[in-house]
Length: 275
Image (cartoon, rainbow, N blue to C red; front, side, top):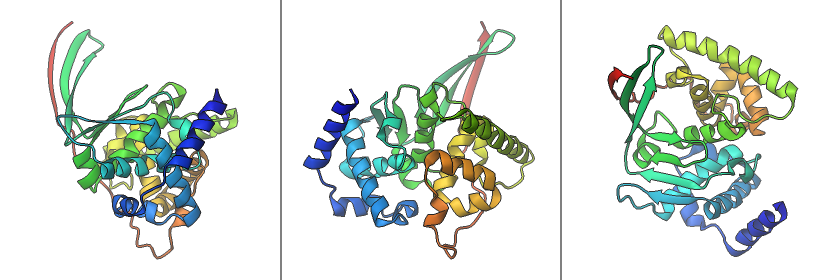
């Protein structure tokens, strides 16, 4: 029923227009949006209108998700799919916004059959089939991370059925190249993080390939020149996947630096008991 979806989307764009004052206010702090060309920005605005019509925002703990908040989240969430299209966010509709960080109960059985339980304190979480859960405090005020880009990268990663650092790719050749380049970059990054060496990409990504993909996506859109300088092959496969070249949006005098970023640590409490 693709024709029906397209008809509905055309109707949305016919009936709704972006409030320019609200758009400027909601995106003022995002350099990666300010550097888009006029055609790219117009395309992003249309995509955001469709996104807002397709997704349902819910405030948690009594939090009011205002129009500026919805637009701020949507603008960032739609940048990675600027050339991919809204269908890459299909199969889920919920976005839950907490006022601040939130706790999620975890459990895991180790190889000895011992059940470990703990509370994760999170700024964001993406789940297969949705929802995407975000802390507005982190989204609005934490300069050391972009939780919106991060969690929506996880959603894209999961489009092939698994959040494993390998998003849905086309040909066998693309998958083989991704595996080679991405794995080489991840294992080198893992060694650097383990040695406490400064890294361009957030050290949080050393946790597993899925987290590496998410933090690399943050750098790809926020600091593309630095990523291309330090990890050219990785930058190239990301550019082919996302079908955009953010480094071309930057000027050579942009002042972008390659200073390492450190994510706020997640606090964890754990208990263990025999299974």
